[in-house]
Image (cartoon, rainbow, N blue to C red):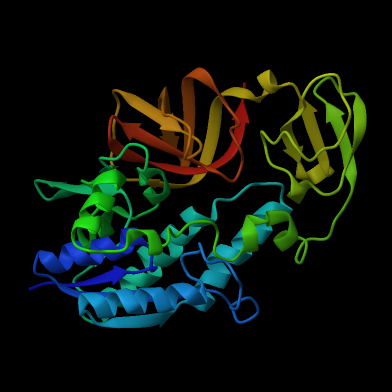
Length: 351
């Protein structure tokens, strides 16, 4: 009987994952992370996956499932690899994805290594994705629920670790999960969804960053080079943003480009957000593919047909049609139909 360490946030997805694994006969151990540093550990964010409230919720659910539950302190790793990286990226005018950073450095690095070192044979999370084995090779694939599919966030998982990971919800839709949870008597209305960035209260990025990044005003230019106003600090803006400039103009203005070395923002009409090419670094390629390739540069965007080339740890992607808001710091993820080929952190984009 395999021992599976399940990351439990107290939300319905991770809770039901633990339930499913126990039903299948695994020796299930619930794990909840302590991630928030001492300076912000009392943060009030009930939707977050690692707040103080989630520890109590997860423990209660583990007790109901009659499985052991432990709290693992990963605060130092979280501060170094997620929070500090988040702050430094914004200082450089880039827009990082903290959930991807957490998956890369915490859930599928620190956690899995710790679990395997203390007797766990595999780990499991409540992500909507699938890991498929074929002739000894493991592939990361989209989950059955195409709306909830979270494979975009999971591309940084190292290929050699895929065989040690279970995603029990990969074959479920959220609607079916809720239906089955109700059938076994769970009060699904009182099991909260875990979402939002856990270290940012009310998802207010500006308020959080203001504690670490000095406001430094700078010019805002139109795409034609005309000076139209001033911004309050490049870390307050992201590519594609429409609100927040507070500069009167005859048509809606969007953030087209951020130039951190010049402390400058370029704004313009929406059509200037379209780009066909990008270059990414910090790659994690899981499997090769040459046909039916598509990619996306944000979680909620649909995948778009493209071609790609990897050279010297750099990924070049050329979309068949222009896509909106290719943003440095965000990630591009490539697919061959439902299979994740890999991805990387966007460095720059071109027309």
